[in-house]
Image (cartoon, rainbow, N blue to C red; front, side, top):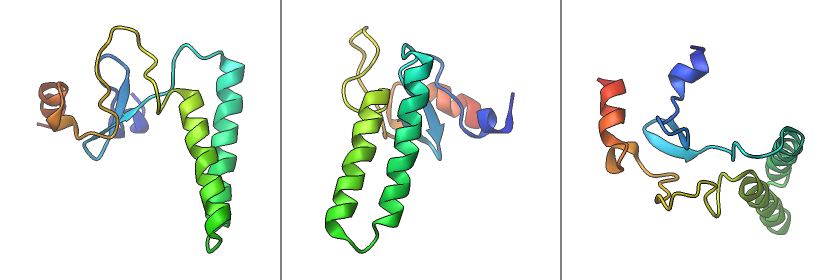
Length: 108
């Protein structure tokens, strides 16, 4: 297990990773690898644009939309990528979700 895997554990179903107790939806594992790499590159470029647009309200808004669009394309936001009708707990505290017992078990 790498340091990142310990620091940001995946939920048992692989849908989320946890940062400071909060669930963050993972990218759609069904994405073609080339498409995933391209989308991640676009996301990183969009994040840099947000950083560089400081002070320009319109440029910041456009850059944030690029970030949102990239995250939706990756499956990290928007419609869920799983098909079992399970609810989405993206950005929720793990302790307030059905993952609470699992989270308590790995956090002692």
